[in-house]
Length: 234
Length: 248
Image (cartoon, rainbow over all chains, first blue to last red):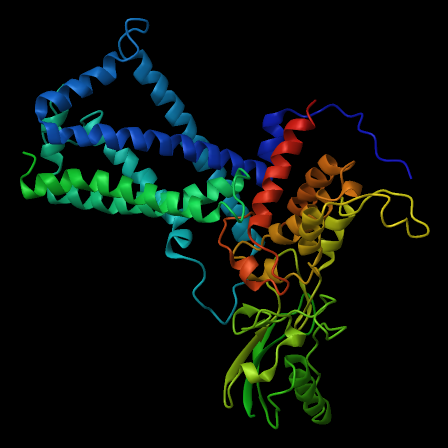
């Protein structure tokens, strides 16, 4: 028996990935890891708020001038923003398409219901939607300052304190940060499996790493509103 | 034992179905779950009713024909096939729900019988090695390292029952497909078709309308043969490698 010989033109790598559930999940994993890397940098920047308004505001200013003198002011910032926007879109669209497919693949529920999988796993989809809505509010609040109660350009320290001095600012933020923790907990470990990095020997390490990342990120982010509420930062 | 059964009854593929309640008596704890259903069917036939249709063949846990969702769990509460599940796993007076596998790629044929031809088509797409057959080759002609032989055998244990699909919240066939791919990948006979196998089998799996993997882990918990969850990660790695390599 002769093997099938492939004479057809090779489709592009992007098409191969996007057409397959395994490839699309890999897109989701990589875009998720990009955002996770950003969150690690973000939480470290946030913690500078504990060193006073001068240091925090200087850091905010540096974000606009980083990459200089090679890059013009805000160019590096915009490069990061474009990369992040691409990651968010790739992550969201692949998640939406894969979820639609998953729901179609299991149209009839079992009559005998029982609790399935962990809380973090079950809340990935709605948790993702909550995070997307939070990001919109977060950008309007502290980037464009549209809905910020103080909204003073160039004074991020004062704007952060103003947001966390309102009850709704605290509630929205705390809920979203819990969602981040849950999302990262399942997401990081899942991404490792999707990209083929998981095996039986490494599983424990990956789970500990996922839980550690989730915990450190949530604790780091939550510490800021808690500090404002308790008056440590004012 | 005296039991109350709630069983999915559906006269045909396009007919509507519903759960029907039956009382069964004189059930021995040593009976298998299928023998208990046989007892129910004998009573139904004597009473002039249609017996409950369910798949079964070897009743030894090695063929993969039987498959029931018992109390919401594929193959019920023990890590074995429905035929090797015994009534001692239940208590006298229990109410037991029995449903067919639920996945759009596994349409119900009748009652508890589903059409699992989708698995056959995934195998046809690449779950084989192209080699001239004939008399058995000399055993030492192709050396296989022990670790590889063990890994191949672990995955070759898959009997294709479909419990992984039934348990998966997304109706995904990832554990089944990964077992077949990993089984052949580590053996020297499987190497020549390594790339086309994973690409074609995953494409066939997608074409059948199975869902994707969200790493819920339900499949590996339900698998009567203990195919491990990292098997899926190994298949993902194999697919990513093949997708890059196929471009050259």
